[in-house]
Image 1 (cartoon, rainbow, N blue to C red):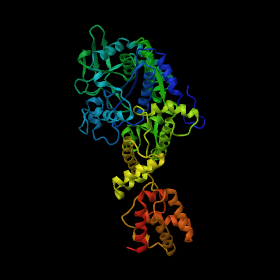
Image 2 (image 1 turned 180 degrees about the horizontal axis):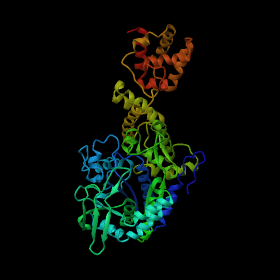
Image 3 (image 1 turned 90 degrees about the horizontal axis):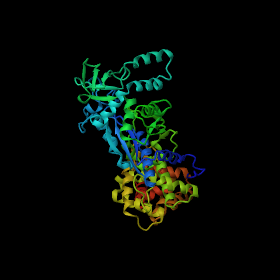
Image 4 (image 1 turned 45 degrees about the vertical axis):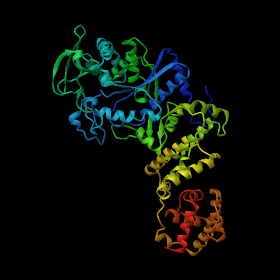
Length: 559
């Protein structure tokens, strides 16, 4: 196992090797890692932790020469129980109907479920994941899945016993008696009513599923009743649309696809919960051990649990607008599975620049001890969304991009790109930069601009007006003018480095008897109409010393 460097307590990557070791013990010819989600609305980025875990297991297995793949199951056959805030569809009209049968309110996809699933799936390539996509609504149309349904119906009594054992274990004596009584006629499946198209009646909190009332093994006939429209009928299994109850649906899919491993959030993976129920059904109904259980803690946004039903959602696409996918993968992988991960968008600039530094450790361009280098050799290729390049591609610091991206309207795009290239050459002592570095610059500028608009503070935002406002001109004292004249002379004398410019401001202030704090305040107010801002030396070079000199001269000469 790779040793973890002491200074980096946040790294707990041992879980990767531990999980892969457990999966390898299954010793199967084709390793399949599965994940799934119900498209009840816009799907938050928390599901990506599950998908990335599966992807990393696959990558490690392939590195070992094993056949491995991943699968993502879209549970679009689940019935509508509620709609999240902002949905225009009527809950009364569509409650109980499978998401696959509800129209897409935006008109771009074949169903409501497909719309929200596709929003997530379209982000998969950017995050470096490529699972096989399985749509549950279509899966239940296959003979193979219907055979799984038959198996469950034939073993209804066994499933009843398992449900009582697991679901009722923490019930009070009275609750247990009531539950046991209700299970005497319970079947592990519901029918989509041929008349009204519903799987159940009632909304969240008062649901009545259209349970199977009887199953004739010999004739393969199902008796059912719809609690919404009242239809009661008996039909052959192949003549109806049927769905297993979710605690049974899960192990049935495991068995059908022979899933080797499936991660699960803490709500499902808690001891005695739905995952353990599924494993027991796997053993006693399907006669196999089921997948390797990999529990993980949830991903939060700003310290809050994300939930589609309440509209607390931060999507993968929203992440890609402000940060590289590799950073998200990195954050998911470096943290132990039993720890909650809290996404803090306001910290993106620091986080991106830290990841860039970690990347340079991998390429041997950053000083690090042996333990950290070993960590980078394991973790960096798994964090990268795509195949690792043989040579390092220099990156524009994100904090630099935050500032320069806001100057495009003032300087023009070509000048902004030129300043970015100059910054990279200077930072890494390069004569030229590779073509890929130009593409990274473009992406990073867009992300930085999006980030500052959405999450930047007033200190992060930079607005340079066409001229110095009159109210600011009126505040310039004679001593300020002396300072500005001295600095103007320095700026006109020739190009200076960032540090030389920073020093020149201090020198000009001292030479004219102006307090240093006042000197910086005057410059910020002249440049961006604020009392503070980005570090002044680098900022002057970004704007261009000649432009800044002209700006100062306009104040000294007057409008």
